Image 1: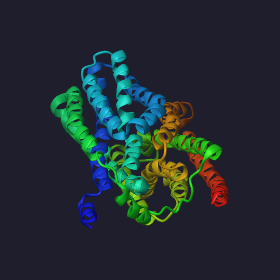
Image 2 (image 1 turned 135 degrees about the horizontal axis):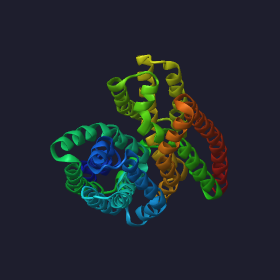
Image 3 (image 1 turned 180 degrees about the vertical axis):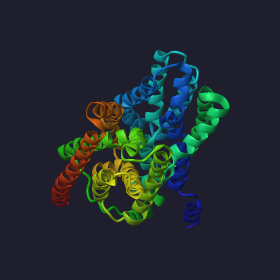
Image 4 (image 1 turned 90 degrees about the horizontal axis):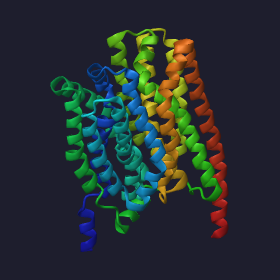
Length: 418
């Protein structure tokens, strides 16, 4: 009885991990993935490099992330996410410091490759695996709560980066970002992931978090499921890879001007947060695949609003909020659907396999879309974007039908074994 009381008195490892990783994810995303949002122009201005060269560094980082993604996932399964994320934070901190000292574009691109290693080891894919290792019975719930923190990573660190750049320049800002990662993220990653739910904690948690998803896929069905989901997320990744960098120009092409376009684009973060809140409170009893179908289905609807906006502010605000909500929930889907379909065993490797094509598509999609705009103009290029979103929606619907059939067959096999 005394042991049970002490167990109940301890803080839930999932709560500790979610809050610790929430802070580290805001910090890591804001100081690395989003840093060029405010530092690209100052870097170009001081060095004389073109903006293409400056952003090429980011593309190099994404390519590296994609190439090492599966290997890092296996490392997480073998060594544990706690060790990998802590090492990743050290790599990220050191590479940001090195980036603040570069003077030629070759070194600049090489350092961004190392930044890519740090990002793959410390951003969402690693954090999702960490949460599943800490609380395997409540992985989906933990992932949903974690993503609430990340919704404003760009908003927070664009403001911080702007003021730091004014005070210390882009080099000083990157050096401070490196120090913040070392001082904030390293101890939180190490201490926040130090405890896992034990058998006593897992038993009632498993009952409370009974999944509506059913049995996981095995054997050939598992391999087919991984390939299908990776393909769907990659096509979707093209759409959001473009939108992440081109949202302001996109809104300007739809009729907004300067400051108004920037203000409307900033609403995407609010949409992301709202979408994740809705998923937490209203989607908890829905299958992960159902959540995926809804989130992906919202993308073409939002793009249709963009086509019909013709400068109407309220329609463009609705487009941005819907798009943000969809992107926010799809971030959860990237972690929740693999957990539902394939289970907690080998989860890090599965996320790594799925992330590889997504990251490579993200690396090239802005350049491909920019080429389309140069060749055919905004309107035609937006039709291509709409086509990709419709293809993604059709693919997730087809996969959902396939998955339902695979579940029936899996259930039949379980019944036969019983």
